[in-house]
Amino acid sequence: MRLVFQIVVALLSLREAACLQDPHIDTRAYALDSLAYWSKAIAGGHKIGPLFAKMGAFEDRVPSISYNFIGDDFAGLQSSYMSVLKRDFYEGDFAVKPARSSGEFVMERGTVFPTPILAMKSSITASVRRTWKHVRGSRANVYAIWLVRDGWLRLTQHGRTVVSRPGEIVIADSTNPFFAEALVDANSWHHHLVALIPSHVFQSFVPGKLNVERLPLDCGVGDGRIVRDIFALLFDEGSRMDRGAASALLSEALKALGRMIGGQSTTDRCLSTIRENRLQQINDYMDMHLSDPQLSLETVAKECGISLRYLCHLFQASGTTFSTVLRRKRQEKAREWLSASHMYRKTITEIAELAGYRSVASFSRTFRSEHGCTPRDYRKRLMT
Image (cartoon, rainbow, N blue to C red; front, side):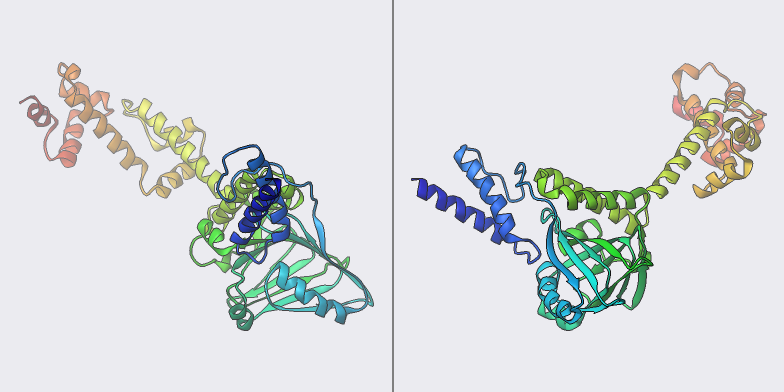
């Protein structure tokens, strides 16, 4: 019975790892995690959740060395790293440009779930060229998101070259040719994180064609900082996290990335909120002082603590003017009072005064232009 149990657990674990069908995921490590989960679930008589369901704590792994080179055999580095590149990333031509007689090149593997995140540290300028031949011959279908920490990263794709500096993000689509070059800084050092996001996942947060005109992206503030900090956290701690928590963090990072690429950053949203709050303050003040015939643009600006120019700008940005908004508010309030049963005893003159009109003639003339009849006729129509 124990043997049958072990076989069932092993088959379930291997089947789940195979279902991933992702060449970038370390299926052996994933299968070990899965094995522990299925063993615990079956032994405890628990219901088995769907693939990628909440699975509890993992084996306590830290970022591990995926490839390590120290020395002067640069030709050996160039040839031996090709297999690592294909295993961890995608097929492409790898090249190095040593500036000294010896150097160091290290790739660290962080988490593999919910997406592979790796780190490159190098004292050697290194590059990857992915051609149409590589694209057609490889089933890799991911977006590579680089977060530069030291040095620079030069990326050419779709006929455009961008240079990402420390604190910036650059993105490449593996289904199209590209050339990426990791350049060392003045201290002969380069360091970056790279997250490999399956295309269908990336495009669910960033729909449509990637807008390369927005690259590189600043990851020092707002949404960029959210992306940077979450990827760093997943790289360092993803293997020890609850899988549901790790997936939720990745989703938040990709949402933030989508906002940045789509053009609505945290800064933009903050500015938008400030404008909305100002407009609300202005509208509230106007509503409270509609009966004042002296209500003017200058008065509102002064009482709301803003400049006359900025007040005009706020209305223009909303596609209207102060006088238009004031007229609309007064007409709406007058129509409401003319329709209300508790206001029947109020004369047309009194309603005109309550709505802030200087004279009943001005009120009647404006009302007729808006509603096609006089205030008196409007009231009569409602009473019959």
